[in-house]
Length: 188
Length: 127
Ligand SMILES: Nc1nc2c(ncn2[C@@H]2O[C@H](COP(=O)(O)OP(=O)(O)O)[C@@H](O)[C@H]2O)c(=O)[nH]1
Ligand SMILES: [Mg+2]
Image 1 (spheres, helix red, strand yellow):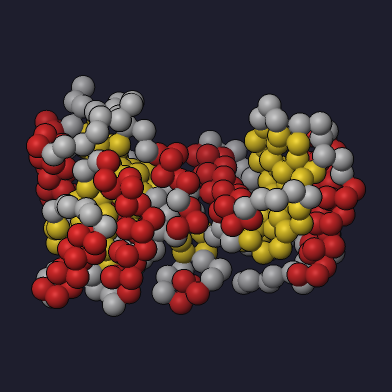
Image 2 (cartoon, rainbow over the protein chains, first blue to last red; image 1 turned 180 degrees about the horizontal axis):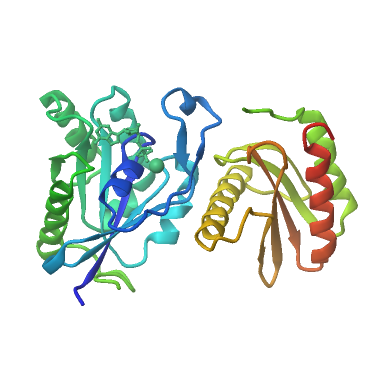
């Protein structure tokens, strides 16, 4: 059997985590969306309150287990539920909306410590070609937190785009300098 | 449709559990997306976090039951050596609100569950 790799998706509500995992999964995805009851309802009907789960078979390269988290800071504890064995994180940004930058700021504020400890890729989603100024703002936000990561423009619903994100994470793992965390790496 | 109960009425119902059931520490109504609506507590606690955890657990419980074809969620019970958490949805609101009751070890599970059920029935529309 090919190796299993666990990827965790984080990012603001509306960045596309649930859509992406549902679109990529080879199995019926596990979803935990409920109707929004706050201001978010103006932008989207439902929001994830526990996790999304899906599986994507990359053949030779192995099998990806995809975990999506809720975007709101109040659900931060869900990261502790899924963190064990995660090979890396995918940080999704809604690059089509002006709120995308605020969303990224919130995500970085909540997860900066976790992002320092494992590889991650910053993925600009929902826009085929985000303006240079937007990309630069994103990179500046990473720098302000003392973080370094590749930035990719992706359609998070595309298998080939996600396969590229995965290859990038593998490269980072091979060449980056991350603490080996107990019970992590590889993970089955 | 969102039909939030009257907060004062809800608080009275919560107060009845906290004062009427031995060992209950916190009674809270949380929205399905994890925000505290009203709560009563006999101890200090982080209401925001409990509300978020309540919605996560409830959603996972519903997801598991769906995968197992085991029908609608009735209640969730998480019991540890030093405390227990009982979650029960308020009927008739489309899952809008969930009651979370946190009790210490000495609390009797049957009594806590009984009080929790009485409370959500009192909060159901038309009760
Ligand atoms: N154009 C476009 N829309 C997307 C994409 N991914 C998600 N969406 C839309 O963005 C909205 C939010 O998606 P959702 O997956 O719920 O976001 P989450 O809060 O991050 O889980 C939905 O209406 C999706 O249809 C994408 O890659 N491109
Ligand atoms: Mg989601």
